[in-house]
Length: 158
Image (cartoon, rainbow, N blue to C red; front, side):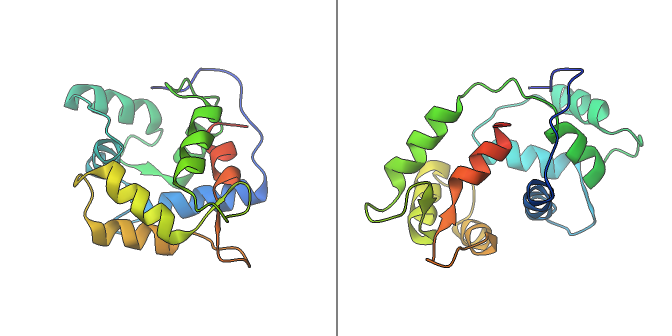
């Protein structure tokens, strides 16, 4: 869904770094921008069905330079706007807790548990090698866990 016009959410340096990590993961060809195909692949991996004309319209709304790609600054502008998402933060947190190991610290999930959850959720829409690459690219804390609570807060704008 497109972001609501107007208000911007102030992003911290850590949030910008987290978003850069996500942007780089989405940028499969490492070209420094996201193509329509890369955005489409991500949406399909997330189980979202989108028509090509809707995707084109979304990209043209975000693409301030008009080059048909989304650069990191354009991506940041979209992510800094409150999003009208079909799911709530509490629902996403509950889903992570369901997949997290029982001994995981609150708000954290082991890389192995996240990998299992993504394989199950994606159900073949994303190759297992890609899931492993994604999980391996995420920041692991000193205890060996991924802090999902911080990432959920970032994407659902607190």
